Every structure is written in C-alpha cells, then in structure tokens.
Length: 435
Image 1 (cartoon, rainbow, N blue to C red):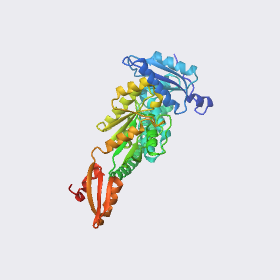
Image 2: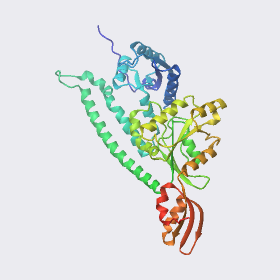
Image 3: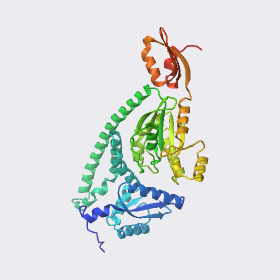
Image 4: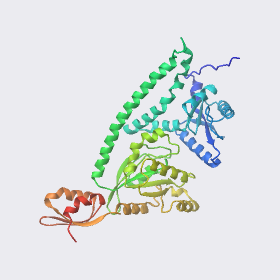
C-alpha cells in the first residue's frame, strides 16, 4: 500500500507566503494547571505574536495528561489542530510550550507542510526586530544561532531522496547539514568574541561611573510594566516607551537629581517574561549585570494586569537566577490610574510597603523620590572638612558628589560641612576635623 506524498510547497507562491503569515495559537493545560492560568499564558502568547504582525486566526487550549514525544500533544489532537489550521487557511501553528527539533520536524511531516514553532522562537524574533545597539544585536544573534543549530536537519530534509551508493554512503542532506553546522559553530565563536569585547567596554563604563561614587538604582520588572516610562518621568530621558512587550532591550543609565540636591544613577533594564528562552537568559546576562551591580533595585509591577502576582514572581525568580536576589528592593505598583480602590487595597496587602504610582499622572512620584532619598542617604556621614588650597581637585570632587551644607574660604584652604555618601567617605577622612 503506497502512501500519497503531497507535492512540495513552493515558497515563492503568493498563497504559500500569505498562509505563512496566518497562525493558529495552541496553549497547553496540564493536570496541575488551572484553566485561568492556561488562558492567561495563551493571552500573553497572543500579544507576543501580535508584536510580529502575524495574523492570528484562531486559538485553542489543548488539555494533556502527559507530553507526546512525537508532537507534544496526542495524535488525535494533532490531527484536530492541523485540520483547524487548514480550515482557517493558516500555514503556521504556534505553541506556547517549547517544541524539540524532532517535534517540529514531525509536525511539518505529519501535517503535510504546516510549520510548527514555539513561544521561544517568537520571543527570539521579537528580540531580533527590536535590537538596536551593537551589544543587543550580538546578544540576540548569539541566542538565535544557538537555537538554530539543533534544528538544521529539517532545513535539508528535502535532499534525503538523493541518497546513493552503499549502506554507509551519506546522503547529500547530511553532508550539507554538517557543513552548515560547522559554519554556525564558527559564527557562534566569532559572535562570542565580539560580545566579550563589548561586555568589557561596558564594564569599563561601569567602573567609570563608580569612580563618581553615586548610589545606583536599577529599574527591573516584567516586560511592559512601565520601566522606561518611569525613567523618563524621573529623569526627563527620552527612552522609547510603548505599550508593547520588549519595547526596549538595552540598559539606559541617567543621572537623577533628588529634591535635596543629591544625585543618584538610575538604570532601565530589559524586561522579564515567563518562559524566557534559556539561551536569551544566558545571552543577556551582561545586560542584566546592571541589576546585579546596583545598590538598590526598583521593582515595577503593572497594577492593571490580572497576572501581576505571576509577573512579580517571575521577576524575583530571574533576579535570584542572575545573583541579584539579595539587593534591597523598592516595589512600585504602577498604572495606579487604571485600578479601582479594591484592586489597590488587594495589591498593597500582597506587597507590604509598596508604593502606588502612575507614570502618566505623577501619582506617588513625590513619595518615591523621598524613598530614593532615604535609601541613598542611609549610610551617609556628616563631616566637617578643611581642604587645603593645593587640594582643589578634592574640593571639586566633593562638590560633585556630596551635599554641601556650608563652605567658608579661609587663608590656607576651605572649611566645608558636607553630607558625604558612604562610597567616598574614606577618601575624605584625611581632611576631616574633629568635632
């Protein structure tokens, strides 16, 4: 009995191209998952896919007891999903869970040409489209190459019929695949070298910032929580802030002058997301080091999101994973203008000590600034100093980094009363006067 093999698809056919941009979304609900949790993740996948301009024609949640090694879902559900995709004239099936390279190949073979991809590929594609600076481009390229390497086989399966010779003869597809694997490994090595150079440059910039001993605060949180909007509101920066996931990928540091006149450094970091591809976590460790190195973390939570608890848990877990779990955290419940009183009360109960803010209306910003002031001055020391005239550079440094309460010029130097941050206290003790 012969099995009818569908003709190969023509990638240049207009209908094939159109179908490739139309998708069915598939979420999974395991026995330990609630229907609400499964739907929330599927909604998030919908937003991720929409960011790429893909037309979503339908979405389903598949209940499974255990994962199928061949298709992730059972064969009956696989046929049902494939039939739904064809009826909706879609060429793309997007899973919220990770697909192995073998499962992707099986889907494309058994569904007669429908492409199957997963959440990780979607996130990678978003990062590819958003990367702007050299570091972000290299980080994304590295993650993409690492993701592509084990999936090369499906790209050359069309050459399998060219096998010839004896049983030990390799087919053309395997030969070409091995060549491409070597090329990708060589490219991975080059990208890693280039990235190491950029990371070293960022480390130098970080050291230069630390020479000016200002307290550092890193803004962290789930993607689209309002981190960039907060940096813009506080510092007058012009960081891209849009209502979409992963609007910005690169850390941006700005100097913020507090009401007392004290200066601090505030850094906006890349947003977190559930089920972030492991390759991206590894690739973006250099960027996330801004959070590890900070004196304090500002954790922004989207108060308007029904998934805010899960989002906060994801952020805290990523911070633990990168070694920043021990940093002091200021929790902000952002978008308070979109929440009713019941939601506000519930969120404050879940996050004791959190500050309700709105980057749109300015609600809570004065309280936040006072909190930043309190944190920055926690280990300050009030000293009376006498700086000789021949140490004028030290006086300039003092004016740049400390809060000057009084200064009086005398014959041999300048008498200064200043509140000095902890980082620079040791450098000025030689000129301190006893009370």
